[in-house]
Amino acid sequence: MNDQIIGLHDWFQTPPGRYMLAWERAQLDLAVADIFGFHALQLGLPELDALAANRMPHRWLATQVAAPGAAIVTDFSALPFPANSLDLVVLPHSLELAPDPHTTLREVERVLVPEGRVVICGLNPVSLWGLRQRRAHLYHRFGFGKMFLPQDEFIGYWRLRDWLRLLGFEVEVGRFGCYRPSLSSEKWLQRFAWMDRAGDRWWPILGAVYFLVAVKRVHGMTLLSPAWKASRALASAPASVANGATLVRAEALNDNKMRGVD
Image (cartoon, rainbow, N blue to C red):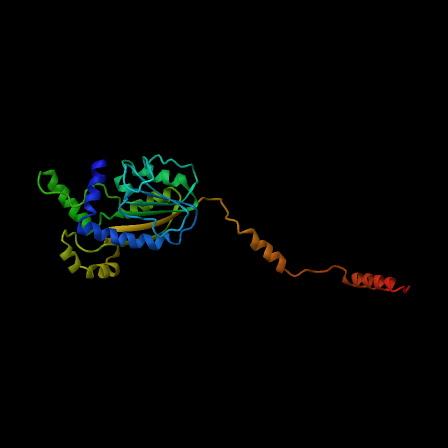
């Protein structure tokens, strides 16, 4: 696992790695900017500040090995947080690098508050990059060639949605990106920039990377409106006066007594 993490760190310095990080950074900034709360956690990938656009007062980066900027070094399948304590958890390729992605996802569900969000980035096996990775893996088994990506395990988009649904999550956002071919040259990647626009329109599920936002639902829970809304509604409601004629007669008698009139 550590070799895969180091390999991914080196791969992000390559032209396709920088291309993918730029797309993911743009998606993350848009998604986390409007997620509110108090506590946010990023699991892995210190090369990408996934919480940069978020405004929560407490934001941490957790990694599985010591890394610059990491506040916590921990096993992602045993997070050092109590249940229902975090408002946002971001997993940029964390499930792909986890020894047991199911356990990691269950742990994320445990620490999230009801209505908390999880944001996930992953590599799409049904893409040009996934095809090149499978071909390179086959060549590698016969002793020649090298892998395009440093990791073998890809978790498909629809497979991940099934996992989230079983844990009680509801997917709010799902999109794909990075449609350019799996090229290692910056020059050739730029020449195929037109494929990002075409792919987003004509073959949207074939992007090399997917991005997903899901919310933790708790069945049977009712969210209460703020108390001030109820108070304002009561204050502005019309009030009915019972037996108004009697009230007017009593006020007249009191006025006559004060003026000495029987």
